Amino acid sequence: MILLYRLISILLYPFLVVLIFLRRLLNKEDNIRFKEKIFPSSFSNNFNDKKKIIWFHAASIGEVQSIFPIINELNNKKKFNFLITTVTLSSGKFVEKEFKYFDNITHKYLPLDINFLIEKFILNWKPYVVFFIDSEIWPNLILNLKANKIPIGILNGRMTNNSFKKWMIFRKTALKIFSKFNLILTSNLKSKEYFEKLGGKNIFHFGNLKFSSKINIEKLLIENEDTLKNIKFWCAASTHKNEEEFCLKTHIEIKKKIKDILTIIIPRHIGRTTEISQLCLSYKLNAQIINKSEKILKNTEVLIVNSFGVLPEYFKHAKSVFIGKSLLKNLKNDGGQNPILAAQLGCKVYHGPYIFNFEDVYKFLNEKNISKQISSVNELTNNLINDFTTEKKDFLETQKFIELIGLEILKKTCLQINNLLKYEIK
Image (cartoon, rainbow, N blue to C red):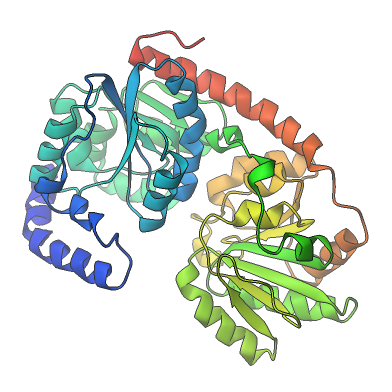
C-alpha cells in the first residue's frame, strides 16, 4: 500500500505544482515562499551553528499555539535550534510574527508528502527529533524519518472516529506507520484508544495541551476597545456554514428584549465573510465586515470579523461566546472547536451537541459551570439575555484555575519529551 501511495503521489506531483501556483494567484499561498512546498531548491537550512534541531510540525494556528509553551521551556536551555513547519498561509505568518526576534527559531512551509521532496528536506535539515502536533500524519515523511533513525512523536494527538475507520480499512499500513512513533501524547482518551488499536506504543494522556497556552492580557488591545467596553454584545466564534443562520435567528430574538445588541461573528474560515454578509441581508440585518484597524460603524447589528488571530481581543470583553462546529449533525464524529481560550478569558461558553474533537474538554468545563450545551435558538437566547444582566466574571480567577491545569499538563508533557531529548528539564 505504501508503494502505491508513493507512486500515486509522484504521478500527481506536476498537477500539485500547478495547484500551488493557482493558490498563489488566489492569495492562498505565500507570494514568495510558496516554493518551499514544491521545490527542493527552497529547502536550505538557514541555521549557521551546529546546535541540534528540534522540528515541530503543526497544520494551523491553533496547533501552533499549543506548542509555544513547550518551545519556551526548551528554549530556556539554549541548546537547540527550532524548526517549525506549517501548512496554511495564516499559520506561517502567525509563527513569523510570534518568533521574529529569535535567531534560533525558524519557520518553513512543509513540502508536499512526495518521497523525493521529503528525502531532500530531511537531508538538508537533519533534525534531532520531530514532533507532529494534533492530527498531522504524512506516511512518506514518517517512514523517511525512521529510515534516518530520527525519533518522532505526536503531541496533543487527536484522531476522529472517521479517521480511525479509514485507517482500519488499511490496517496493515496503519500498523506499519503508527508503530514508528517513539512517543504519542493524546488530547483525549478516545484518541488514546484509537492510537493503541492502530499499533501505537508509549502512549499517554495527560490532558489537552491547549490548556497550557498563556495569554498576555496587556497585549490584547484593538481599535474598538472603548466601544466594546460600553455596549452589549456576544460572540459566535469558529462558526461553519449553516451555523450563522442559527446565530442570526438568536440575534433577532434577543433584539425583541434588548434593542441595542451587537452580534459578532468570527467564522472559522474568513473566506466566507461575504457569504455571511449576504445572509444577514436576507434577514434584513445591517452587517459590517470588519478588517484590522477598522472602526465599528454606528447602527451595525452584525459584525463579521475578517481577520486571523483576533479571537482573544474580542473574548477579553465578551461575557458570552458560542463556539461553532457544534451544531452540524453531519459532523457528529468530527465536531467541536477549541473552547479553552474563551474560558481562560472569563466568558461563559455555549456549544451545540456535536463536540467530538473536544469532548473531554467540554465535559470538564461543563462540570465547572464554565460552559453549557444548548440545543435551540430560544435556549441560547434566554441564556445570553441572562448573561447581559450580570457582571462579566472576573476572568483572573478562571484564568488562574485553568493555568494550574495547563502547568501540570505541560510538566508531564515535557518530562516525556525529555526521554527523547535525553537531557533534564528542570
